[in-house]
Length: 134
Image 1 (tube, rainbow, N blue to C red):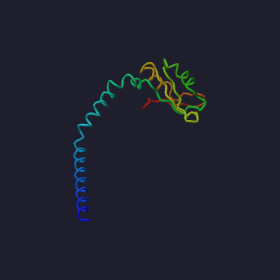
Image 2: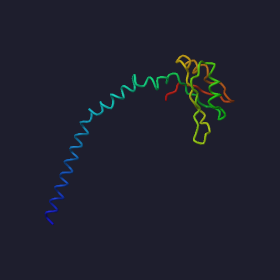
Image 3: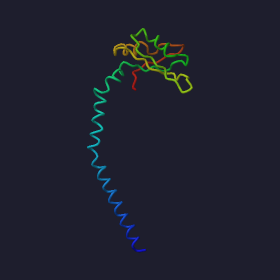
Image 4: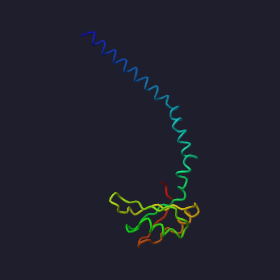
């Protein structure tokens, strides 16, 4: 029985050594962090511009009536500029969540919409408009 006891202890020792090795590797990880932040940097910089560069051209609209759909929303904001996209957020049931996004062709139009459409009435409710924070 003594032999197996020694084996067990030795295995235990080896496992501990492995753990230490892993700890050391973990602490040495900054190099990996830099790797992952490099693509991230590209994404946040130039890489993000094409897919999400229109973020500033989007406004968030809240307090919508449940009756309001994207078409109503689009028409309501059409006076501010060229609406490239209007979206009403809905729950799984399809019921409106009472908020949405309107995207404009230019940043100026979106800024204009924030000023001129905030606290306007749409489908009997006073809506608020602010920048879309994603």
